[in-house]
Each structure stands twice: as C-alpha cells, then as structure tokens.
Image 1 (cartoon, rainbow, N blue to C red):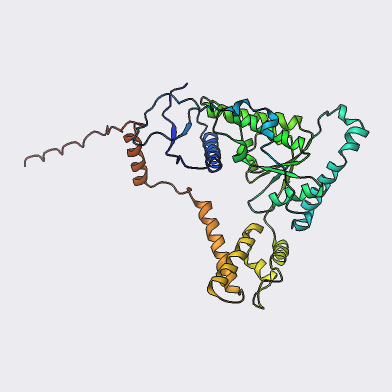
Image 2 (image 1 turned 90 degrees about the vertical axis):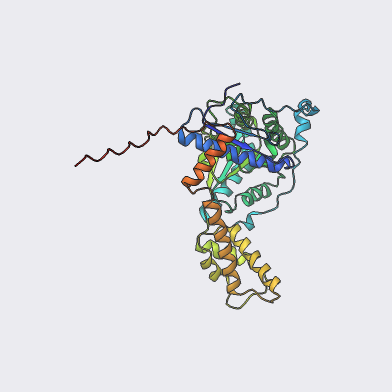
Length: 388
C-alpha cells in the first residue's frame, strides 16, 4: 500500500448499472489519458483511482484500496475453458471491397502471400530450427475510418480463415489477474480454431508500461501487456492489430510486427469510394455523382463518407421526398465534419480562472487538498499626510 500523494486524479461515481463492456472501454480511455499525462509531465507521483464510493461518502487521503477479487469459480477455469469464450466467425469483407492506395494494397497482398508460403519457408527450407514458433503479426495504423478493420477481415478471407475479433473490452477485466489470463485464452482460441486473431484498439493494450506502479490495477495492466508479448512470441498463427495511436505502443511490441500505414483517401480514392457507395437503387438528382461528392468530402475518411450518405438518405426519407439532391449531401457532410471537430476539441480548452477555483473548492470539500491560506500581507496603511 502507498499513501495517496498530493498529485492525485480521483474519478468518482462510476454508475453501478454500467455493462462490463462499457465500463471496460471507460477504463481503457482513462488508462490511456493517465499514461499520456504521466509521460508528458514526467510526474513520478501521479496516480489515478477509479471507484464507486458510497453515496455521500467523503474522499480522504489515505491508502489505495486493494483491487477487487472475484470469489467465483472463474479463477479456476482452465485456459481451454476460457478460450471457449472466444468463438471464431467468417470474415465479413474481402479485398475487392478495399479501396486503398496501390502501394498499400500491394504490400498487404504481399504479406498475405508470405503467410501462404510459411510451410515452404520454415519446414522445407529448415528455418523452423531458427524460429520454432513462426508467427505473422501485422499492425494496421492510421486515422479512424480508413479501412483497418475491413482490411483485417479481407486478409482472413484471402487466407480462407475464420476470424476472432477482440478489443480491450473483451480482454481487460476489472478483477485483478483476469486480464493476463484472458490474453492467454484468446491466443489459445485462435490457435485451436486455426483462426486469424484481430485485436482492435491495440494501443489500449500495448501502450508504454507504467513506471512507479503502486496500485494493483497498474500492476495488472503491466502484467497484461507482458502476457501479450509472451503470447505473441509463442503463437504460430496470424495476428492483426489495429490502432489509431501507434505512437503509444511499447517498444517491446514495435519490433515484433510489420507495420502498415493507413491514410485518409485522396481525391481519386474518395471518388472510387463514392462510386461504390452510390448503389444503383439509390434515388438521386442528376447533378449528384461520385466526382462531385469526392470534392465535397476532402479530408474525410471512408467511414465518414458512408455516414454522410446514410444521413442524407434519412433526411430525404423523413421529408417525404423522392431523391437525394446536392443540398442534402452538403448538409449531411457539414454535420459529420462539425461532429468530428467537436470531438477533436473536446477537453482541449484551458480552464478559466473561475473554473479552476470551483474545482479547487470541490477538492477541498472532499478533503483531497487543503484550503489555500492567503499569505499576502495586508496593504500598508497610507501614511498620514504631513502637516503643512
């Protein structure tokens, strides 16, 4: 146990009725934010605690409570029993559905072909003596909505393999010690089912290790990351990771994968994406075509273009009109771009002096910090004017 220091982030009041998936995603984002703050400030004594204290309870500085333990039979499950929780399914996309720059598409296809030739390289040519457990790990990184998940399914389809998709929510656990066990189980599931393992939001699992750890939750996060590296070294199958934040990866992981950078589509590729999105059944005005829409969506991802199309169609259907016009697409695109800008700037504004004062007052009331004592000396009394 370690005394809570002055540099403390307290997150209080997580709703008790949250689903475990939602809670896990929340913890993932909090963990990433915590790691980023600790790295930028180089604070040796910066801690975070997340919990659900009793209603009306006051938070006091003191020892950090030990993490919860699950008093159920889950701890006694074998790796095989845990692996059964991760069934494989058929891939949902193919390479024909991918719209990528030629160099990236060729690089992915080359990687797939190398995977096909592994028996020749490692068995016929004897390289298994050098690498007894050959694995192929690909890392797809780039902005959201650029086709990383679609590419993972397309790779599985090309290899005629089922796919197991997992993210932080499926692997992380609020119970101390479950995360590493789940990591081991999901690799075991892929091995047993001869499935491609796709791990999304990989930066949540593979970011820089926490240093100066004192809380059980911090130690569990580090253990889970170490288990991923160990499992990857022993795995003989194919793993595809995807992330929007490749810079957050731990160095121990960086060297174990082949990296593929997904970028936002240029005008040519936006035009091709719109050609595929404008399905023949869609009623639209004569002046609406793929070239026009590509010009209106500069800087947009493929996912945002799809969302804009659906929003425009909903707008027209609700209005009771029969065809989508340019104005409908422009309104939908403006809405998507505005929503993105709002997300990107959320939380980036510096607090005003009034907001900082209100936050400090709240922390004083909760007993987390002491009230500031005004040590400014009172202004000197003005000297009496000399008698004249």
